[in-house]
Length: 387
Ligand code: ZN
Image (cartoon, rainbow, N blue to C red; front, top):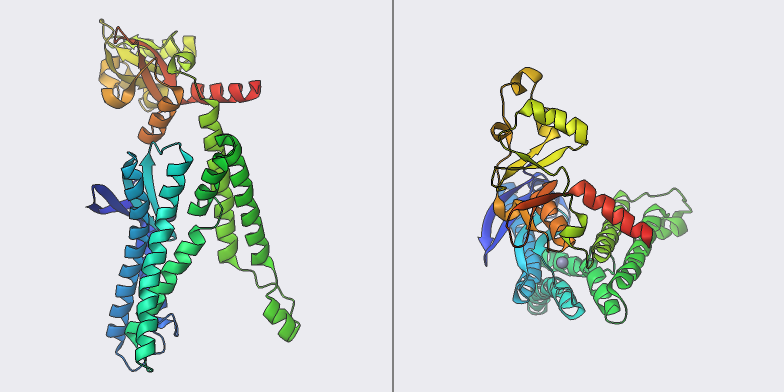
């Protein structure tokens, strides 16, 4: 499902807006237009509503631009290190640059991670500097334009600070891991950084449930002012930290493992002129749900899977051959060499959302087996179990 729309391309990187952004953007405009100063335009009842809302829309645009520049900075530094950027997606609470083959070197990792917050600090600093500069010259600066300047400045400083929290997937978490990784193994460094991140998330959640000290001391009121926003961010951080940990464990576990060790060679392929009815019998007999389809010369033609056959009724299946039902093939992404690293196969399956790859022999170029996501997952579990 498409969850974002593409809006353009900057320095060769496709830029997308996530739907969450499109839905909440009018809300940002509304909040900025109605909130009283010094962060909103709500106090300015003397200016017309359309003008107030236009200014608010400009603020929202500057907000998008700020997020974008933050992500572009990460991407720019990463590109300098030879990383391929698949795209930048802007979500409502921040951006995400999809990078391929991030360098596994601490010195590069922390530079990529710090570039975003530095850019946000620079933008925030520029806006706030201008704001206070004007304030020094004119005493009466309380106008809509200066409010806009102050808000965008503050927003960027908050963005930079929040991103520097030492918690995955915040940039600060990556900086922390990079510094730890200089002193210890990458996996150990990740575990430590993840622990710090989870601790932060727990503290944040506790703070979210704590009574506000000001209310407590001034009124003696101990009702709990549950802060759902803080709790939501805490949960998000906790889940993201856990994901980062398991992804790193997977990469570390598969180190040195090649496709050859994980692939299935028996009952892995079928000839394209077999009938679909025969194939269903074969699947039952061999208890397999995926096959690579080849022609009589052993050349790769595509895949056939039980989940796709299932969609056809028995009557529909009856006259068909496998060649009528194979999924379209893209040799570049569907075929992997048996000498490749297993982690490469996993990455490719994640990127292309495919559950199976065909494996070719290194010299013959013929299909000699398949590698499925399920087999790979099982293999990883077994490696972990071996210790
Ligand atoms: Zn960032």
